[in-house]
Image 1 (cartoon, helix red, strand yellow):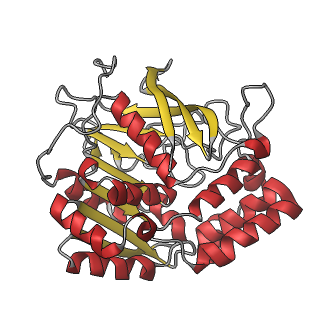
Image 2: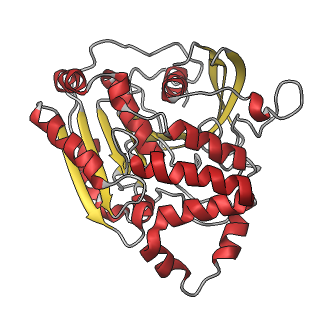
Length: 363
């Protein structure tokens, strides 16, 4: 858990909806000056009660919607925009890079991690301290306070973003009354713990960045997805293009982070379910048949126990020809449920917990 997060602030960037979050953090006893880029869509209303935090996936960035610099759509562009489930005519949607963002070599991506400059001018390298989901939650809480938002309207995300959303539910459900976790799990199971992560580390040592990206791509798409997308395409050229912006130290640091995910380690499930039921949390979980990172059964049992304890928990499973990456490429499968969650009433705000004075009154 973050020992300190001091001086958190948010400044407008050069382009529409561009932001720069900064703070002085302490991770594992080491002071870290954080700088994280963010992107927003829509307008924060006068009541400041329409803010939605969207959290990005493992190799994703803050470019969740709109159009990327290369002309391609943002990774959840099918869900975020006017008239879409995350309706930017109604909601202020914001996505912020994590520390150690994988795309650290993209000139438009601002993050702080082992492959970024240390205050002494060299890169952090192995000096960059370990950080965990408690630290990440504290950073995102700092973002919320910098916006002078009392609580999020909702927190949502796919894959690693879904883990972050679940961490909000586990740690502060009163500040995230609607949570959507797509292609995620309440804990890291054997697929990630005993297969993917050890293999990724070994391959990275021998083959470097390109081969690490090959492993990530195979687990992400599965055999059917590779067959569909690369039957007549060059996988090697695709990996070479991805390696132009990716950072191997950041890939490995995010893998380490993912390995620490366990909601029961935050709060035992029975106690957590009781808290969720009492707080009025609305939870949507979505899993994909054939997902090689998060088997649907891991969440299915958790969802059944949650609902049996009185939590307003909707659980959906669907099949995708792109495996785990159906969480970003097959969003039509869960768009209706996402729309219903965002439009569902929430319990009244008990107190303005988390709000803070901010100069961003014009956000």
